[in-house]
Length: 133
Image 1 (tube, rainbow, N blue to C red):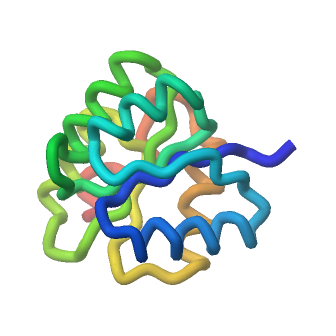
Image 2: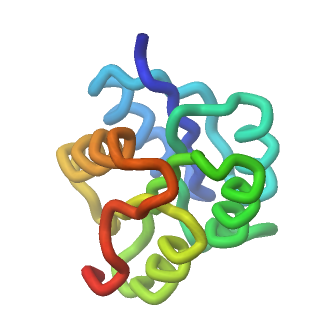
Image 3: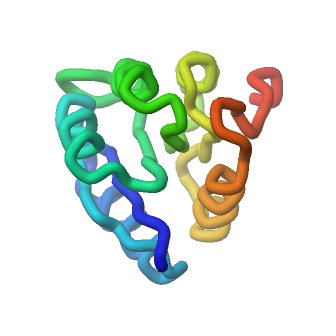
C-alpha cells in the first residue's frame, strides 16, 4: 500500500509540483494545506504517513504547525521544504521535531530520497543533525 503524504506550502505551484513528484514516485497525496492552521486540521483528519512542510506561511508558520503536530502525535514524520537562506528556521523546525529537510530550489530526486529516508528513520529522532545545515 502506498505511503500517504500531506503537502503544506502557501504557494500553489509548489504544492502541485510536489504532488506530481510524489505521485510519480508512488506516494499517495491525501491532502494539501496552504498554511499551518490548515495543516494541523488536515493532519488530525487524515493522519498521513508523512508531511512536507514549508516554514514561512501566513496564519501559522511551519515551525509552529510542526510543534503542534508533534504534540498531537510524537511519531509524526515531517520533512521541511524551505528556501535557501532560511537555514536558522530549518534548524528550529528540526529542533521541534521535523525529521529532515530539503532546500528550494529542489530536484525530484532530492524530494524522493529525503521522504524515503524520513519514513524509515526511528520515531522521534531527526535524520540530520542540526549542525549539518
